[in-house]
Length: 289
Image 1 (cartoon, rainbow, N blue to C red):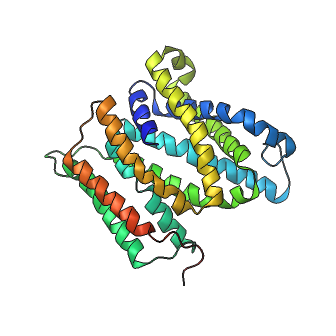
Image 2 (cartoon, rainbow, N blue to C red):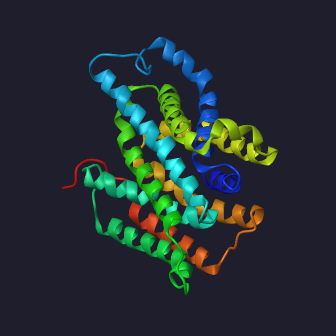
C-alpha cells in the first residue's frame, strides 16, 4: 500500500482522482476475473442476477462494501494526495488499524483495555506530530487533503469489520472480483464529471505505467487482504498497515523528491508504538466483559 500511495501521488498530478480510482480497479478486476469466473459459474451467489432471500441481500451488501472499500476510499485517498505528500498521507492513513480496533470494540468483537486506550492516545499523538508543521504555519492552509485521507481510513475500517461475515460464507476470489466490479461501475459513472472517456487517450506513458502498477497491485493485494480477513480478525490484518508510512516516506523521498523531516520520523515511531500497545497480546474476540 505504501508503494501504491507513492505511485498514486505521481499519477494524480496528471490523472483526475475519480478517473484514477476507476482505472485502478478496472485493471484489478481484470486481474481477478479469470480466477473468479470458475467460481461464478459454479454458484449464482455472486452474480448480479436477481436472487431470493438472504443471498439477494448479501449481493447488495457486498456491492455496497465494494463501492465503499474500493471506490469511495480510493477516490478520497486520491483527492487527498492532490494536497498532501505521500509520506504524510500514509501517516494519517496508518490510523486505519486503530480505527478498525475501536469499531470492533464498539461492536463487542474486541475488548477495550488500558493498553488499547494508551495505544490510541500515542498513535493520535504521532499523527498530531506529523501535522505539527502545518499547525504552526503562519497562514494555515486548507485541511481538505488531510480530512480526505482520514475519511478514507475510516471507511476502510468500517468495511474491514463488516466484510468478515460474508467472507465466511462465500469464496474469496469471487467476493473480491464482485466487489471491485461494483466499484468500477460506480466510479465510471461518478468520473463522468471528469470527462474520462475523452481524456484517457491523452495520458502519458509514465501515467499509464503508474496506473498499471497500482491496478495490478490492487488486484493481487486486495485478494490477499480479503483472504486474510476471512481467516483472521480485522485488527490483526489491518495492523500491518503500520508499514505503509515507512515505505511511502522512503519512496516519496527517493522518487518524488519529497521532504523527510525529523518530525515525520518521530511521528512514525509514535504511531508504531501506539499500534504495538493497542495490539500486543493479540486481538481478543468476543464481547467485552
